[in-house]
Image 1 (cartoon, rainbow, N blue to C red):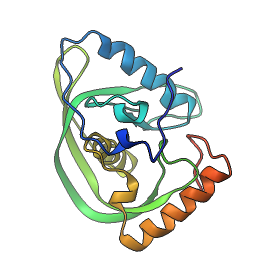
Image 2: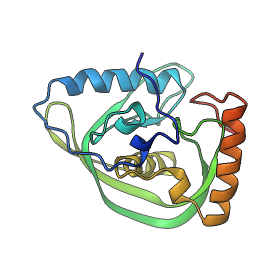
Image 3: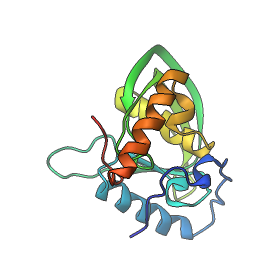
Image 4: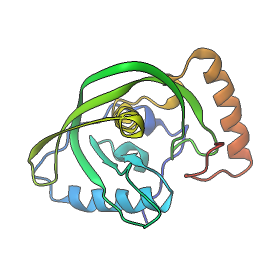
Length: 176
C-alpha cells in the first residue's frame, strides 16, 4: 500500500508539475491513491500527499454507510471559479493527522480537469465537495492547512499537530 506523507515533509510544500495525459502509469497511481484514501477514511487525496509531485487528485465526497465508492480522478485540475459566502469550517487532512483546523473558504467551487482517458470535464460543488476541491487543489500548489488558516489559528494548529504526532496520530485521525 502506498504511504501517506505527513508534515513537515517538504514535498507537501512543492508546486506540482502537470501530468502527461498519455502517461499510462497515472492509472496505477490513481488506483493506489484511491485505496489509500479509503483505507485512511479520507474524502480526497492529492498526489503530493503520497510523495508524487504531479497534478493528480482523487476525491469521493459521496461515501455512505452502504460502502458504495464513487471516486473521481482529476488529472491536471484547475480551479476555475469560487463563489458564495465565505464559510469557516473545520478541515482535516490525511497529511496532518490528529488535528482539524478552522479554514475560511468560499462555499462553492468549479474545477476543470481531465479524466484518465484524456477527456476534459468540469465539476462544481458546494458544501463538503466545494471545500474538498479547494483543499486538494491547494495541495497541488504546495499549500497546506497551516498556510491557509489565519495566523492565530496557525499557531494553535502547529502546537496541536506537534502534540498529536507525539501521541502517535495516524492519517485519517482528526480532533473532530
